[in-house]
Amino acid sequence: MSARLLAVDIGNTNTVIGSYADAKLVDLWRTTTEPRATADECFMVFQSLVTDLDLVTDMVVCSTVPSLLAPMREMMKRYLPKVRPLMVEPGIKTGVQVSVDNPKEVGSDRIVNTLAVFTRHGGPSVVVDFGTSTNFDVVSEKGEFLGGALAPGIEISVDALATRAAQLRKVELVEPRSVIGRNTVEALQSGVIYGFAGQVDGIVNRISNELGPLKAVVATGGLAHAVIGACTTITHHEPDLTLEGLRLIHQRNFSDA
Image 1 (cartoon, rainbow, N blue to C red):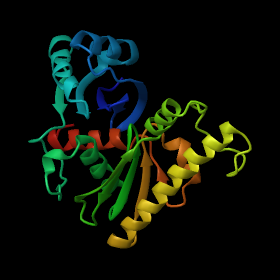
Image 2 (image 1 turned 120 degrees about the horizontal axis):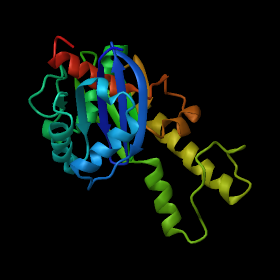
Image 3 (image 1 turned 90 degrees about the vertical axis):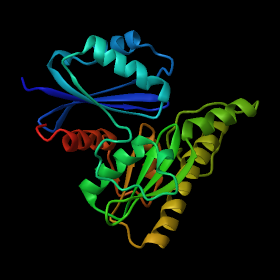
Image 4 (image 1 turned 135 degrees about the vertical axis):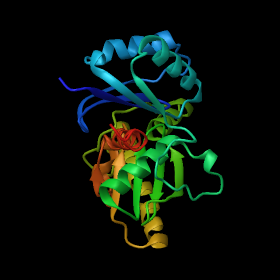
């Protein structure tokens, strides 16, 4: 069996781990992010999920949770000393020019997504990342990260509504049989699904008005499946987009990979 590269995307809600062999994604795992996890606990997660851990030679990590960077480094040093680590942080080669007012504010996952979508589709393009927040990452025709928009995520909005309204509750995130909900559950589903779809289409159309025709509008993130069927502007659904960006960054920094 060939050597493995692990691509690890640590988000605020979920951590996604992808195993690559010869640039091909061969396995995928998703787990809940624990911001206070220790190095030992991080290794327990990897040990229990990654079936080919003994084949891993390289690991590339991006994280939107700063508190997990040190435990991840300690985990790799203590438990995986033969694995070559790469953390996506300032100073590594990404090939992405960050054309915003303060580049240090930009989450590493947005840079990773920019590289992946430009490599796959060119630009100008937009990534709509449905996670804890809904991120709109705008990529220029030259592959620059231009900024974008940030909105509350789907689950955050549903949780807030259920918490603040005594007669409302969390519902399954599926399209109802009609936009006009005939009961409370369907009314909530209509508001959430079509409301977020309208938000996506409205923002993407405004971006297109500023940039011109877009080559691709790519949906990714754990909650994309719930909304993209109701969107009219999404052109591709690529759940592995961030992992592919991590693989490309690893490739840029280790030419022998």
